[in-house]
Length: 60
Image 1: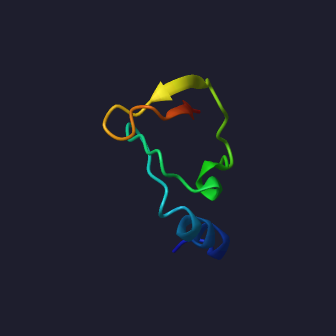
Image 2: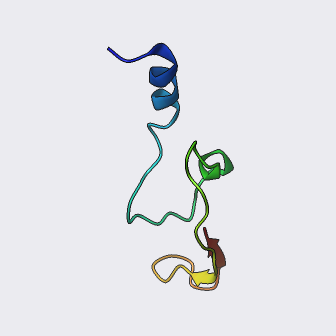
């Protein structure tokens, strides 16, 4: 049995993807860091070659 606070937090993050998937249509709420996470690097000027080729973006 999980603690209620942990279970509540897990429900909040069930829509978060992990690992190797890149998405360009992410809600700003999903970009907030979770406890224990930190930014390692930022890649500027990333181009989505399978979608809108002229739209440059940022990967964090």
